Image 1: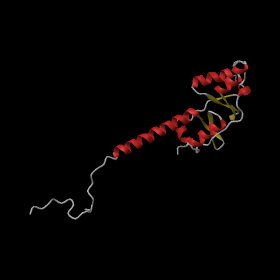
Image 2: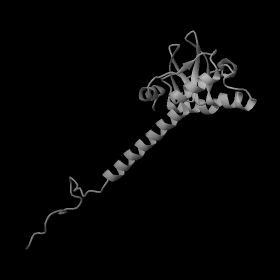
Image 3: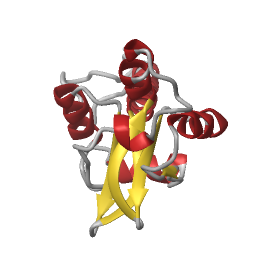
Image 4: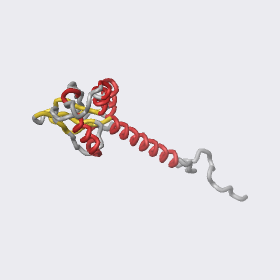
Length: 165
């Protein structure tokens, strides 16, 4: 079973954060620049929430607000679900599905060490499936029947050339 730690090692442990007092516009600009769909909201180096593109769509656009006049703290998600780096990818996927979230901060020893997205989880699952298929194909290809003579003949005289009389 692969663990969340494995994904962080592959993708890197970059953590993009923003202050709750910044504008949503600044958050969107940072997300676009870094190519991420969510930012961890921190105050005094402590996680206080998370803001995602989904928060923007549902809490700004649909309510007729503007990103330049709305602060991150007004739309961020305060109840943040987190995972530990030793949890499995399957546990991560289950939590994301059950809680309907796409980003999970990774916490170890009360410290934020990374963020895992649903995209990261799917990439890992697809990679593992391809790897498994490749291994299975190799096994199938490697099972070409070979004629192996038994160590002890089954029949008296089996395997011996007939003697001319």
